[in-house]
Image 1 (cartoon, rainbow, N blue to C red):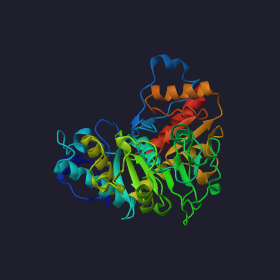
Image 2: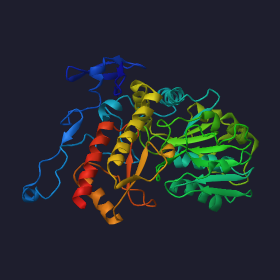
Image 3: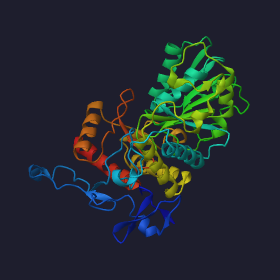
Image 4: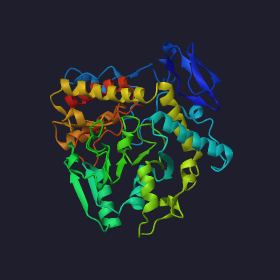
Length: 441
């Protein structure tokens, strides 16, 4: 069986004989696999999978013999940005967001029902333990991780592990802004490498990113380096990993992510997941520093449980909440967490095949065990000006947008391969990169 992701009002749009009909929205809607294959392809696409390349301009006709031929097809979607990321297949503004309670208070019964549904679906799909708390917080992933650090860091030494830009940013905030009275140790590695995570101490708090979005390097599955008998807490920024990589919840005390990454949701809101050990820290440690209102998670020395039951700290966008719910429904209808992880890994596989057949292309992460399957970073045997020219050329052709490497990373390409991207599109993009390389040679 396959499943249809797009929702409209309280109904779902199901492809039937080349058109769409609506049926009551439910938690799992099986349809025959042939019909499911059509899901996510809209009339604006010239083909169910890819769009034919535009004919060559007349000015190019005279040089056709000397220039490499353009590939015959383009990706159906040229959106390969690493954030905000591509919407899921089948996404449509009118149908996906038709049930949003616009103009209603987030404190109304309908608004609260939407928020709590999103929390419940998050727990179920990710397999988060029942005794872990989940909240929607302000400020995207950045707000969530800062909220946790400002509220909980301080009673024990801190190990900060980083190997790319965002992890380095958390270290800077800890050292330059929090200015803790305890030792802070940095454990680092160059772009493309993973640091010696085993050198962390179970007696310290540990702050790290699960996936280095700007370096294409992720933590090895299982995170065996985290001590099960630890007395410190682990703080994991997992924004480009959740829903694309397995999260060992028993190893994670504070986990944060944002909707606009792997799920292709809207920005501005973050997710904060706390283990019982993290809750114990909040109730036993009161930082001497002042905490802004949007960072406060306790009242009278006890956890503010209402925050983790849908009573958000500040007003959320009900349109964004609906968008998140739509993405969660898509995960469910696609076969759940295992299925969407497989989609992302298949996308990485398409680029691994590309690198294998082109000696001028390389992964920034040379070790396959730590290679990200979401923010895939490539380096090419060409100078940075030619890399920039390639990025501009592919964008001008309508083949790929926003695939240049992060500004602090080595020059190259960064191609988002999360589950919302179709593998056929990655395969088509690879052919166009080969064409661009030959064209710029």
